[in-house]
Length: 149
Picture 1 (cartoon, rainbow, N blue to C red):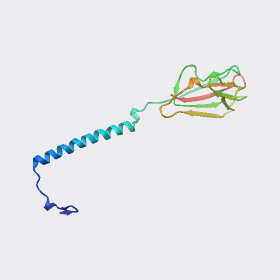
Picture 2: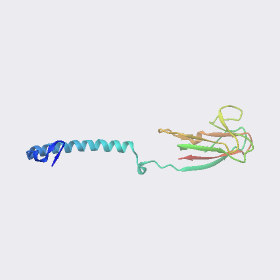
Picture 3: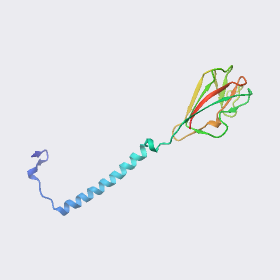
Picture 4: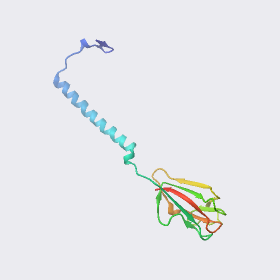
């Protein structure tokens, strides 16, 4: 039998001690390589079992007194993303921003009936739902919202 390297008939018998030493060295190198590759794969490709679970949480918020900023939630609440939609039954605009939001300034996003906005963070950052406030043109107008926690 022959191949590009020559024929099997040309093969030489190698001293078993030399062969065992070479195999031992190769095995050690392969073990090191496997350890490096395994570490890289685990670090760069998380599995579903190792992922952090997130769940959608929904809510609704109304402005009882127009001109008064109201937080979406009462306490600090970490989230990866937030979806906010003005209620379809609103009679005026909703203003979405931080604690300084008010209908007279330009420090906000204005949402009319059924209009929506989504905020999301990647790269290890997080949002705090408690830092999102609304105000309204009219008493009792509000929003529906969903965030991923």
